[in-house]
Image 1 (tube, rainbow, N blue to C red):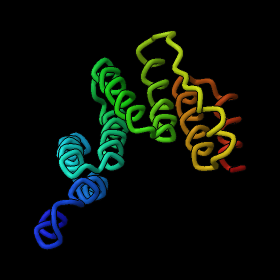
Image 2: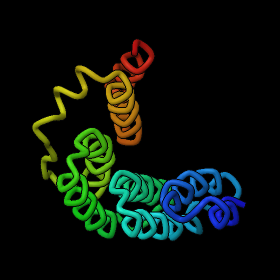
Image 3: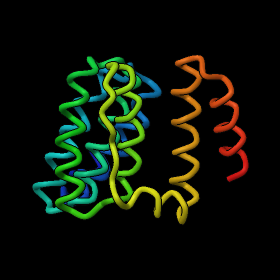
Image 4: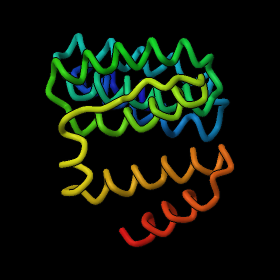
Length: 161
């Protein structure tokens, strides 16, 4: 339906429409089947010169890959590409969000690699949405590794936001 509407309103919004429609689609189809649509949204955004929706399509694809169970090493490579794209376009807030998922992936791989970006502390302190996401991700990974005291602490912080 969304793609058919694009023919009427024009293709300059295709990346955004594909991005949002794909997020709706994952409630109907398996996430794995929807991942390719984010690639289409990225390509459409780049053709239209819409860097924000290109970056957003990539962010959502990477987040969905984590939930879909894509090989962790493949995800590591995708994160590197996202980081390049986000830095080129100065989308540090989206970079902070994906870095939280990247930390989970690296921990699951067994890597001791530190993932830091200079803007992170400032954004977590000044943006409630980023703080909430940060607490959720840390609660999730703490629970997965059976660090229940840490998980409880992050859940309490999450609800304080």
